[in-house]
Image 1: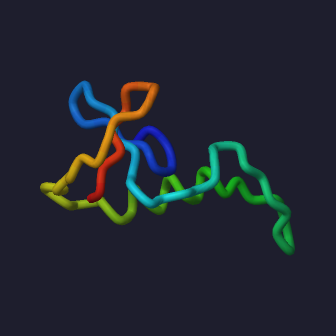
Image 2: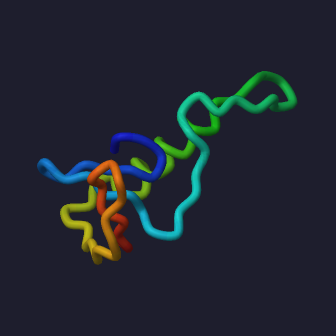
Length: 72
């Protein structure tokens, strides 16, 4: 995982299709303390893929930074 909706497989970057997650450093005030929701989104994606041997990827299109928008 690079960040919230961007993963790297080999030398390719994939951005998750139809996913809009907070950027790293997106801080919101919680009831007891501030939370970095970008970090929460990143670790959530890590949790979803933990222990998974294979993830299927269906490319949709490329974007300017060279990443591929893909449905997983």
